Length: 432
Image (spheres, rainbow, N blue to C red):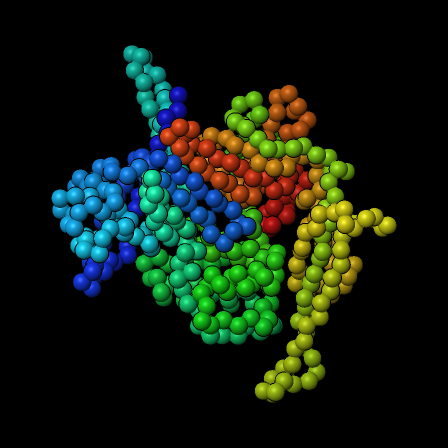
């Protein structure tokens, strides 16, 4: 039997200024082994992973110093005899700092306690397993029937980081230059929470990108608008950015089979898939195509106004996946971007290779399972069916929504992206 384990840690970070203008340091750490519910959304398609934690009001908690605290809405002018202001919703005369404020650090860990062994005397041994589902910061606190704490991951730091004025031009500037400047600015503004960046070896020239008087997160959004195929997200304190969203180290193989091929965490329709919105379709039934682009920078023979080298850009584009004389409007299109591909035939070959990952016989959609085995986007998983074993296959995970409720326990909703059986190991090892 599995018993849910919930561990939520909130670390006070943000100082509090009372009604008299006095700054009050907030340094306590609160750990909760309960909550009414939480919802976490995690995907590389969104800049931020987000979480909402819901607590009941008017409950006792204990601080790291074992002090008993009764929280709730402010009901008295002084908190020494009444409730502690949990989220800043008290009167102006309240002197004590709120328990939770915007910018406070948050960890959400969850897992199970289970019977690991039955001793010879009949007594039971228990083991615990837990994973960090979310690490980030409070973005807002909402007080309704329950107390709701809204959180964002490390991207919240970039939303509070102002970028210096700068213009990035090709071919002198690469996407790594932008991410490095974001890292430097964020680490200077938030030196208690240092970040670093990783492009996975992806390179792409950045041209005519201006920054200044905007946040680091705004700059990332601007890049995404320029090149929609780019993605930026955090994996813990690592800012990942560029054309690679699936990193080889995230695949999490559990071992190898008799043929030496990697194995992965398995989900079975008759065992641990609770419900699903999956549909199995054949390659011939799915009409997908791609618009492929390559923007290339070249050095010209003339000089610019400053006496330096004059560069110009050329654009090559093509469409793959649409047979001749077919109805182009009947296809679902992807956009693929490449660097320094100057030949249309070469661009067509590269585009078709990328498109092949979306052309497969297999499942599309999402399914709900328990909290174990723990899955993150970028993992590869195996889906099996005892009744239809010919449909077994491996799939890349695009996103995971984690949820917990006192009436339903711990759940994961796993969103599939594409089947990996038909993707060569070389491509998987390079990142996708």
